[in-house]
Length: 443
Image (cartoon, rainbow, N blue to C red; front, side):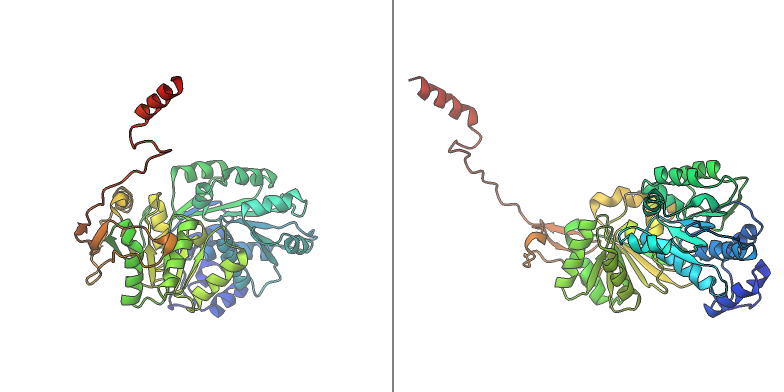
């Protein structure tokens, strides 16, 4: 959001307490998704909304939902019986939404709580013994609390599914259906998604009642302010190239994506051994470790954060300059989500991808989805080493002798393979040895 006209948010129908909170947060001009969604939500409409990541869609549902609840207070309200429920796929996104609820509801008497897994459940149970107007939750932990009779969903007036496409990708559809069965039939439903897949449209058809539809960007379009480029590089040279780029380009804040948790750990360890401070963030990390790594990354004390797609979904980092796809995602839509971490709220950003020959099909799928040919780049001056550098288990015995990113390779000759005899039998001569053994036994 950029400074422009102080009355822009007022024109959307927001009341004074929320205009004050918006001003205190430093915003004056609504984003396109906010301009379209806020009046519709305030009018009580069900909503199916899609917008590129980083366009301010959290405020697009948080602000009007808070105003609707504040305008019609419920009396009396039992503890553990929320009036609004926001479901998110990840802990980080849940925490981000909860922070927005607190920020924009600062001048109201509304209360809120965020619950998710990976942390102790007892403090959450204790908090639910008090009044909670807005509950932000991940599906699994919410069902755990319902099972312990700590949450009553019978009073929900507004339901928000945030990042609904990711919830479906992560296999939460069964949990979502269980939760929907616990909600009152009469309620307002808001479904927000970065993309409109056929699965999302099917979910919306069964959930929403004559919804308004808002789509502020073409389907699956990558952020226009993100400068994208590709380095063609062998898989075994990627780590060296990444370390070289971080040092050569003096990146002070880079979010790096890997496909797996194990890969994130190994890459963070490799960078650390090469004098680049890095931390991994993924589902196997404790919540305290994830929170600490994210806080250090946000304040600039940690230059590199290595993340999996699930852990990074919902990360909101202002002015993030650099995103790196260390490995391309298997699902092309995830590329859009990844690079959407940079180029947010009108700021420029950069996204590079390190692409091995075996990933070219994935790159083609991404370019087909985004309808854009991504520029190929070369790392002038980079030459990968061949000699083992003492990485122990991390050493990958490269066959490539020298390699310039995006350039030609010189392949070292392979040494002849020598097979040791097994059980003192000549190599590749097992049948003859067995025959001789039987003959000897028959003598």
